[in-house]
Image (cartoon, rainbow, N blue to C red):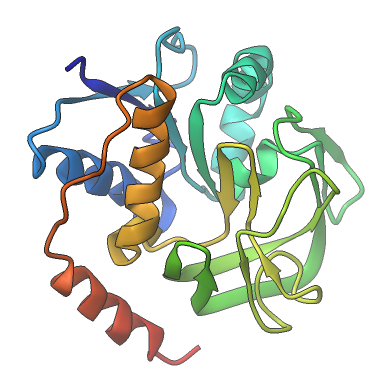
Length: 237
């Protein structure tokens, strides 16, 4: 089997709260099943491989997002083409925001996004921060949110999960993250996939199915990951 090619966008600039761990989780879940995998780090100025199965992007501090902003815009056509072609994408926090239509800062500056996701983010003086556990179609997702950008979903995007007021996308509409085709956005750091094994496998299943390698993934012993999720979900907000 040809290795599953995973692109890790901006591994140095966008790796707050351990988001790179999502790459490690997917790599190990493939290796444990004796499935070949290739990780391709893509930084500022690097070319995006033409043949990619899965793209991961993490979150970063405001300064880091400023560093990659112009480069991310340059990649807009490639990212839109990848999404249209069914490439699986997981975007965390800042990468999630940049995949949307625009980010309007609290100071009134408009930062254009690349339009992969039908979402708009507005900066605010409100910060949503703390441990977070939500129920999704792919099991419970456990992570940590810390963002002052408040995201509103358009009609083409559906919520990844439901939450309670004061958390999630905007703290008001009880949504967390979004799904649009094979593109997933979320505010959950942690890394989220380390404590959400069913969701991790759903990303892998979709990536394999897209390229014609559809098959049932061999079961893994997820007891430790689920135990970690149980502990994390009980931590104080």
